[in-house]
Image 1 (cartoon, helix red, strand yellow):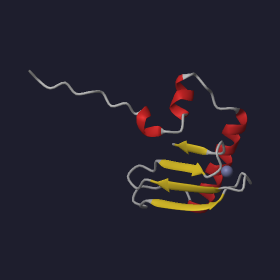
Image 2: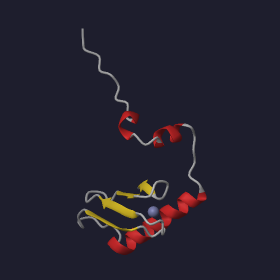
Image 3: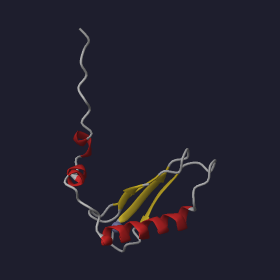
Image 4: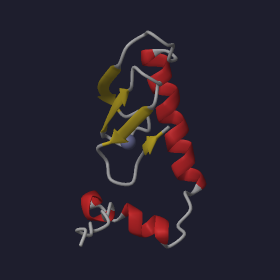
Length: 96
Ligand SMILES: [Zn+2]
């Protein structure tokens, strides 16, 4: 008899409750979207837009949302996917 594999529970690795909020149908507020846009603009201003062959990029700087936190970002070389997170809980955090 073949061994049955247990499905991986991705929520077990998150640890911050965001996936539970997502499952509950929580939608980002306008303020959250505004903070993400401000963060994105600051990252693009600092790092430029992604172009193939440009290589990976990452960095940290004072959050442009003036929350007192530090915004950390990384951008993949292969496809330009951008991940960013502010150190202040509830500020900007996203993947695109
Ligand atoms: Zn922030």
